[in-house]
Image 1 (cartoon, rainbow, N blue to C red):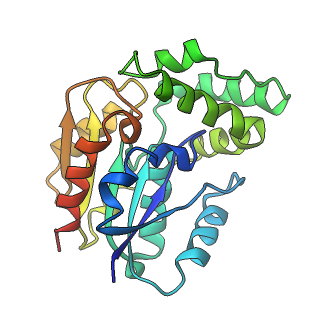
Image 2 (image 1 turned 90 degrees about the vertical axis):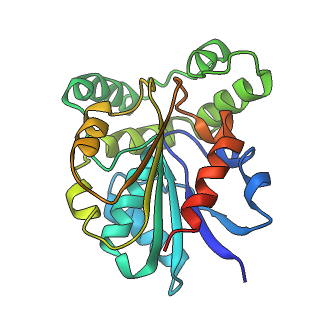
Length: 231
């Protein structure tokens, strides 16, 4: 029987996020995508996840916002988690400098003032600028999910608390993989994590990519396989 890995996407992403990663992993693992429910309450979100997981003991991988959800679930249900892996994500609160901007965007979104992500803007979010298919995937995910997903997902980012100190008390392998120049990542939190003595396995890649599962899927798959060998 294959080991199970639950995959949780991030803000305004869906199962297409894993489309380039799955071919590198599907022969060895059972990969289950969990789409973030349309809720502003982390407890409601992980209740849905818990219903899916049931009585199984699984591995869980979260990208960006999904990494925080995976961390929160792990703390609430440690007996069900074998390993935790975070991609472009930190188990921490939103940085103070970002809160006012997000609150403004959230208010606009609640007033149904939703701005689609055009191809040019999608391109700006990527490290790889010349992959047309990649640009279309990022743009399409955002626009297809639309305002109905944007409002609750953005709202949850304003309700985050720091989970790191509790998380590292758990006796499970925890991995973190990120880009050194990712402007969407909380680097203050990363620096704090690196300065504290803990068992977290942190690996940084040189670059700006936030969408690592799409842009550097093969590289990511190697680190996932390494994480899956840790007991």
